[in-house]
Length: 80
Image (cartoon, rainbow, N blue to C red; front, side, top):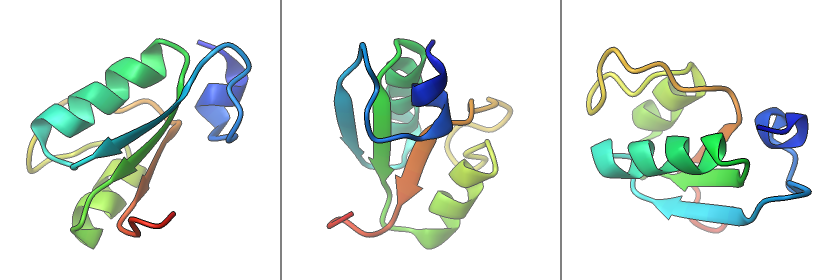
């Protein structure tokens, strides 16, 4: 994985810009898989508590015990 994707920079030099709609188990797992593949990932979750948890590195409601790598940019603003 490249450093730019992990840093949250909007331009991953070898990857795509991926938007994931939904902060549940599938959305979070997909976001993590895309990040590990070297893509820039923005995840939309409507619940601000879910966004805050993802920013802390875990989604305990839907994927308890799974550590999320830094680099997933979570937001509750669909226009972001």
